[in-house]
Image (cartoon, rainbow, N blue to C red; front, side, top):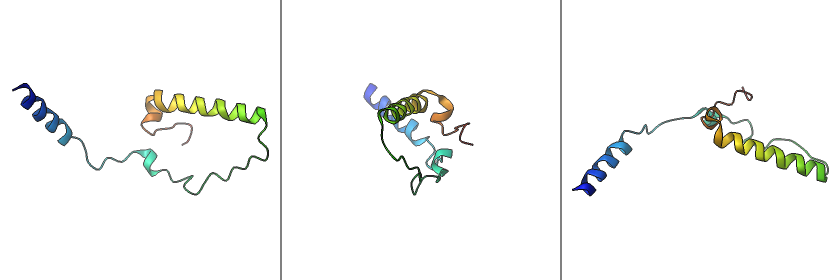
Length: 76
């Protein structure tokens, strides 16, 4: 009986989800053809800076609720 109830509830929850949900981040086409950023030489300092940038953005992307929703206030 419990299994049937769980299956019914799961079906109900899944069927109530919006099918055509579009996020603001999905509409961003700025870098579809690349960033056009050229880095002439990869020195240890440049590599360290890129590593820090990647870690910072990764942290923000997964932990800040507005950025996770696609509402980057800096980008707008």
